[in-house]
Length: 593
Image 1: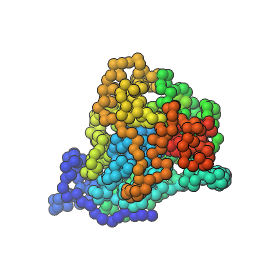
Image 2: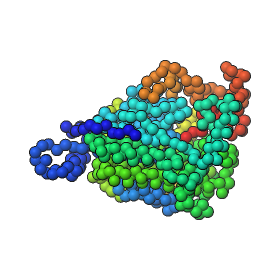
Image 3: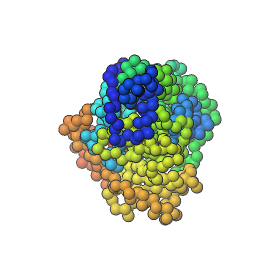
Image 4: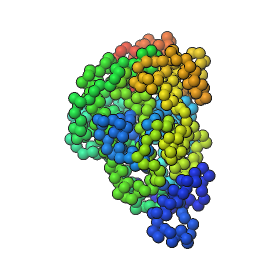
């Protein structure tokens, strides 16, 4: 267990970017925590105690929580966090997939500014000298640590060690049942015998989509994350000079939906209703939806077609059980924060990296621009600010970097931030800091740029840099059609004009950047090209007919190793339909987290 460094950081002069009301809050807070505060204040200038930051990131969590109005899910601990802070009803990610969403959080830059929409490309390929959110805090004297998944690791991507005072840790395991582990070991060995590269085995050889064991919470990784977080908070109490930025990355409810049996038993599976509607929006482009390619990699899930109703209910049950399991770990951490006397001087944030389709529109997982994938839970509790309130003001992931810096009195060290601090909303929940947010998702060679206002969502689909006339559009009105059943782009030209004008305020999106060199975990370039790099461009070059998939002939044409290429095609074609989708090609048959 790594302890916090024992050193004192004192704010000698107000930072120019800090708001005076917050300085007063911090000063009062410092005085309230010091013995004989009044007498000391007469003898010496008051010292301002920097608040700690507890940042809780949750993987694949949609706003399916009691505090967001859901009547079925059991989430008492996140609900009580909402009661001590502000809940944001209209918070959105900047891209509904892991790595780009987390890049936006850590760099304060949107995916279309970085030119990174995939999992494999490290953000320092685009901004080598980026100063991440925790780095800004470190430069202000904070101890920054990560437990669990904060940045994306895997698919060729690496942890950013420059962002943490001590090495980040990511506990496992994914599965705990002996039978599951034995079966997966057997199939992994079979994959090795077929020649699957070791780096791909864990991605290609999945276990079941759900699991339940009658065991303790730390039978799975999230329980171990809470265990370690509790140790760190106990250490912070003892060594209480230096403020901390502690980031926890809980993995559930990400697939597979694994949780101890007691969390499954919270629910009656027969009581779950299937999501509605079960078909894509009428008039939507055929490429805009997706139908659960990530889910279909798991054992027991059909490779094609609609999922049977009972299987849908089981998956919905699993998502709820995994959510309740994660919620219990959040509760353990909050209890430790309170028990160690750290809560009065700690900013707490709970953030979801993106939403999740649970069968609505016939879709599963994330990977779209629709509401269920883009909308996220966001709760902020900070000393001296409003408690138990909700705001319908629009916020997006890139807004968190400047917001946390302002709350803590830390000067952002990044050269550029695209977000807007929503501290004014934290002071007054009816305040608005923006009239719209923007998020993106790529599909084949096109990029969908989505403008979300309080009422509408516009999605523009075109290749980055292509003429505006080439675009295909979607338009949804959430006041009259909250379930996105009909694309209104052809029916409401005036609304389209207004929203396209908002979109025009944003710079043109960059194409996916080429990964010209491998980036090490400390942010430095090795100068070596990776095999399989810039696969987006490779896919476009091979897709001769532009239909968004590769036939066997297209894949095999001009391969440098014609003897081995057919075997690769078979490995990459995970759904065995005789063609490679773009996702299958880009991930070499693996799934997209």
